Image 1: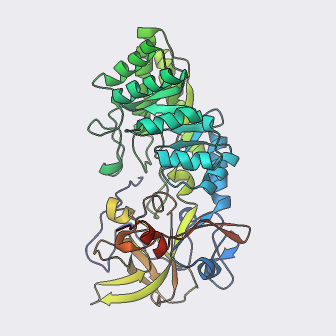
Image 2: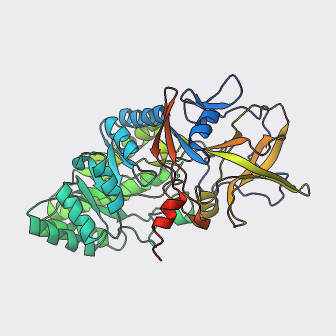
Length: 461
């Protein structure tokens, strides 16, 4: 049984926790699939990453802080590249993007997917070759499309007839022929949270397959003969553990490929099946390896192409969370520990929903560990909460921490590389935390901490 984004149902009774959460034999143990690959307990019992202890990281950079294991991120890039050696692997920048990460994924041979002008600007400023950039988005402005054309972005994923007309006019003006894909809404709803299931019909992305809009878009682009239609694109959701959705999606998209061939005599050379591959946030999650994903997706595509008598197109995928998610944890300092009448113990940390909105937004589940020391105390079921003025400001809904957890301790939450810093906010006027990359016993700042001066600089009233 594989878990999905919404997680298991949680009891309202604080001293029981969810059914899948087991009392640990050793509350200090690190569950390997939850942590970056270099995470260990040092001789003093403190968590260490890349050979550097978290107490040293906290002393130099403060808390909260996102800690990125650079070797872990790079190794996951290499794993995907090796598994999909005959395909193009686009890192989905929306998961987390900064110039240092752009350089890392470029050095590891990956492509990059962006979906806004700001992400494109970050990619270009970091030196990402523009021909290795894909540009997504359901409402790309004229200015964004113009910048993409002028930079020489390798492919643009088209999302509406308005956008087709917009890009066609710009391309004619410049005398260029950009490579484009059509985003197809295939009517597959992945086993995921409702708000991030992106392939069913009632949503803002793409051209409907069932209604005929996707075919009409393809015919329009081919008939206009201004844009270079390279293929079709499908994305069925996020935090997906079951490949069955990809099988249905590929079957429907390739049926459209065959329809285009039969109507216009053109076999499109590319197929992008998107991303959304799940990671382990808790012990209930069982993600597939890149090798397993590659084997399954190739089998699906090869089989469907044979059935439709199509040449096998060049495959693209877009892992974001699966690369950066497990490579990062967030380090907090405990401020208060509060037992509420034996119902629940609340461990309050110095961050919260401003640095990780996913628990509140998606009902996402996370894990945590006491990071600054080892403890011989028995396990205590606790709820890790933030400092914001919201009762829903929860970081980890249920987790076993040592019963002697106390103010001043450091607590680490793994799996926070994706959609935490990228969705962070200044709620309650809290400055966003920094991102620190660690490798070979050394830490370097790659995104600095915001300051109160930063907040006030935008307040021009």
